[in-house]
Image (cartoon, rainbow, N blue to C red; front, side):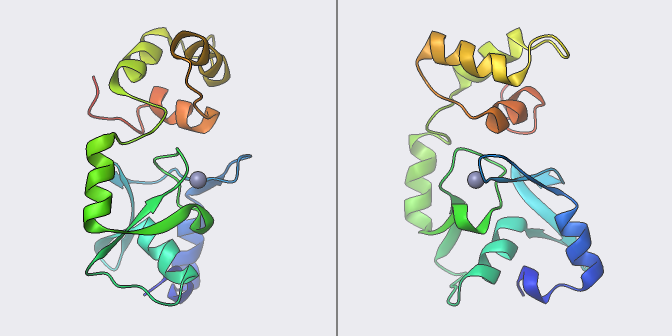
Length: 154
Ligand SMILES: [Zn+2]
């Protein structure tokens, strides 16, 4: 089943939880499980990336392939930003770090400085670039400070 096979109600429910960003990412604003976007369907959690990706490509082998995003947005479900990875490729990526731009130190650093309504994500992006020399997208930064990504980092 792909997102194209969903009933209209489910499709509406799916898209109501997707926020389309200026940088082209489709940021998932719904439920996550194990930091992955999930969608409740027929009493089961389905991975949103699978639903989106399966609808965009013809051949899809669930046994050996996982779907990863190529952008820095951990919650992106945009089919154009998704690609197939073999399980071992994906595991080595995880071992190298979940995100090219972010790491636990940066995540803690920005959360210490984030003040709702005062220090916003855009300002934090500039501060991180100055302090660590690394570029983080505004959407990725929002997810960090709202604790929608990197949930395991205290
Ligand atoms: Zn993206």
